[in-house]
Image (cartoon, rainbow, N blue to C red):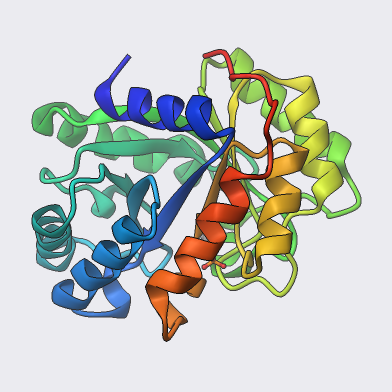
Length: 257
Ligand code: 1GP
């Protein structure tokens, strides 16, 4: 098992659930991204994801990762929209496939193109199924997702099980960045119950209550992006979020990998 995967699983084992902070390099300068990461680290977040559907790459991505690495000790994990979202300076990459895309490019095309770079840079790979749930937001639109309807938890389960059988260790239920409504709790619970993958949930999570409910339902990693970007008192906001997530599940079982 790689170092970053171990870091995440240890955090989950310790606290029942973990929090990751998503930073989109296209939304602010690398310096501000590093400030956001510092705030997240001070607040107890467990890692920094860098990426997003704006598809930032190249120098902006490299500089953002370098600035963040200089500012915090937390692992920096790439969250790429396509093969452009790869930086040699990161600690790991969510090597992800949008299983419910209608286009093979988002299922395996971008991954095939990016794989040689990942190898060359020696990045730790965290294999992940990326499942877009309605409303899906920009990620769903860009990725041409055949969105999982909110009322169809059993459909999410079939994708998640397929991901597990394909050997993916992580499944990400994504409602889309800034979504007005997050992934429904009963969908989180259904996927948790049916699979042994490490379950990530994100998109539209802004309040402690919403985060806590998802963690209680079985989400092991909660991702927040917009909240962190927009909050005035960032550290306080993230601290509250982290506290809610980590106190949600006293007795949950440790996920097997
Ligand atoms: C988006 O799930 C993440 O990929 C985070 O969403 O920006 O709504 O927190 P928010």
